[in-house]
Amino acid sequence: MNIRKACDLFLDYCRSSKNLSAHTLRAYEIDLNDFQRFVGARKGVTAIDKALLRNYLGHLKEEKGFKPTTIKRRLACLRVLFSWLEDEEHVAQTPLYRLNAKIALPHQLPRALTREEMGKLLTYWRLRLDLPPKAQVGPRHLASLRLTRDFTAFTGMIAAELLFATGMRVGELASVRPEDISPDGEVITIVGKGNRQRRVFVSRAELRTLVRTYLETRTERFPAAEAALVTPQGADASTQYLRQVITRGAKQAGIRRRITPHMIRHTAATMLLEEGLDIRYVQRLLGHQSIATTQRYTHVTDEVLQKLLGEKHPRGRVIGED
View (tube, rainbow, N blue to C red):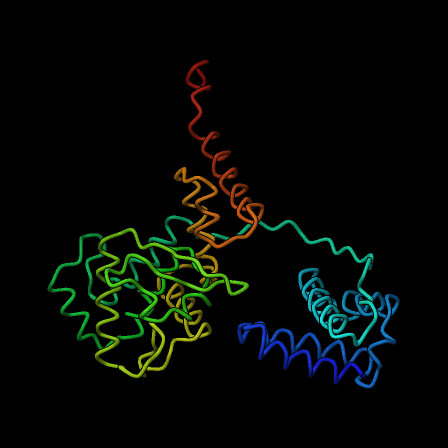
């Protein structure tokens, strides 16, 4: 079997049996097409060995100049492919077995919004929808929301609020259906990575009211829509659409750097830890399998602690320094 046929069969298997997201399937297809171009589409899968794989990784680094994160993703894709080929007995053993290919990733802390930036973003949507920026939303405001012509802003507000309130991924938010949200708006059941189901919670009463109002308005205007969040035309709000709405909204709110929905997820985790929430609860909220993944955020909060100690520690006053 040549590598082109192997990749086609593998992708068919992924589409039919693995319940992967469209984003993951596209990434697999891009990565495998690139590998085929390097080795040759007619190359037999049994002829692909460790030396060829090392040459490919070197090609990605030296000739294409890819970042370590991209190279690591390409390698992970090949591991899944050859593991499947081994299971299907197309190869006796995956050539990646004991492949010594350590890829050093740069130490990057999660990028979170500051409290000021998060406040600007949330306030922007409220002002755009003629809601009081700080006071509670009342019946008059809810009635106005149901009639709003700026449904983009309505969706943007609900999306930003839910991402911040629950720490969910934007892809998870895009896949939420109205039936996944409890009638009172407090509990949302989502399906995360690896098809794992978990529940997240909307703790603030005002946000629950806004979510219910949005769902009622969405159902009245677009009864055929399937997703909980929709576009002004009534189409299901895709991951890409929600990214665009959040990014544009942040720019219009006066935030100078580019903001993404994933940064709001990081912000929720970081601020919850800063407020003293146990890291195990944050792990559950975010859907991390390993607590080591959640511990990335403790480095961010350590930086905040270091800064606060520099500003607030009483030593200077104790010894009489100015």
